[in-house]
Length: 427
Image (cartoon, rainbow, N blue to C red; front, side, top):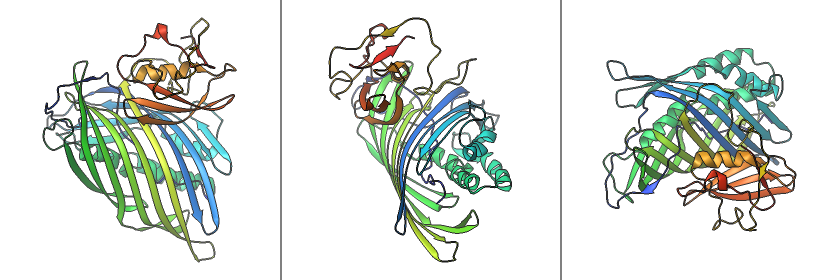
């Protein structure tokens, strides 16, 4: 069976906010826009997939972190804009029958098939054209690369990795993600707790036409430095309305049924329109029909749970590409910070770690060390109400869940403490 196909498409644009409650009943006009500038966009995703075909079943877990340069040019005389996306680094792991991993910054290491796909993608300019109201017009650059690589792919592993990339990182996948942001925006000014609906259709490679519907709600309109941040919760439902036959590695394949349930929280700067934060959970159920090597029909079902989160911040000049929570920040001299004496600190939802905002939360996790002084691996990150994230960590002593609040009122860095049984490396 080829590598797991990532049916859930994930590309979003976002960031972090410092929040305080606004006046109830106040109406705000929220729109998505792309202010000119240069940003660093970091995307993390974790997935669990089960594929069944006949009596066979394959389970897999995946984790991926990607760092992109995001450059928004000033509008031309007609008001149109060009946005350029360039992948700076990618780090991925997939555990199925065997575990494969790849890190674009480790030359000559990692899975060869993944390297075949991602190595030529590093630094490739992906062009997004926006019209005068910042709506997406077209995305170009990725499909051209995938078509070129299709001529070069030799092994089944390379061809399968290319199929995954074409679905999750094709021009249409980027377009769908950007259009989704437009669809969940309210058409008029809204107050806290107001609700509205959105919908769209988009044609996706291999899957066919997808119809999406969204139920949206303004959860809060919070004050932040320089203005307000609107927090929008949405629940989406996707289905393929016009399945189409495609060839994958020379085999006829049709996604006969695709149903996706999505829950997301989106944070938008009211003044600039920049989508500052977007965290999503996708539940994917698909049925796939293919022709086996013997010419007989093979039916498969695919179930995937995907959790993704993206952050964006103004680009900093110089220095290596650092993946928050994966790489250590530049080390400085000094020892480690002590641990709390409270056995529930960080381990219970009602007693979370409070390092400050989301940037501080990333920095805190990057400094965590387990009982043996090793940096824990990060599995799934789940966001709860009240701006609390659950971090599933792999430590030397086994799995650990930590509750970290990234809302206002966090501790000063000098007062940071590790949960009991752990420590913090020096900054």
